[in-house]
Length: 59
Image 1 (cartoon, rainbow, N blue to C red):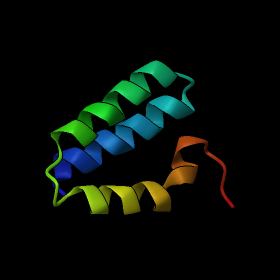
Image 2 (tube, helix red, strand yellow; image 1 turned 180 degrees about the horizontal axis):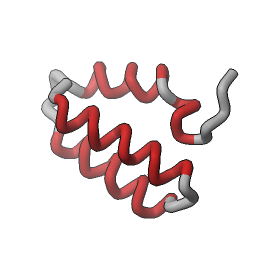
Image 3 (cartoon, one colour; image 1 turned 90 degrees about the horizontal axis):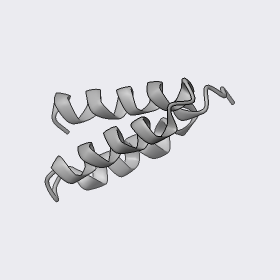
Image 4 (cartoon, rainbow, N blue to C red; image 1 turned 60 degrees about the horizontal axis):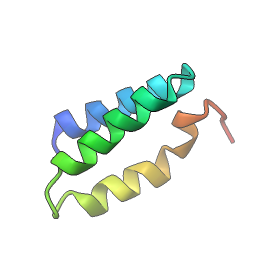
């Protein structure tokens, strides 16, 4: 995935952890919409791998 998409997802997680849920969701949604069909599987995997980044819970 492009670095800009990854950066937007990381920022989305950061905003969500800061209890800025609406902004975090908007940022993540924008990144997903900007992604190509080829990037979607990698985004899905990134979201699975980094789910704890959105809650700051470390398993």
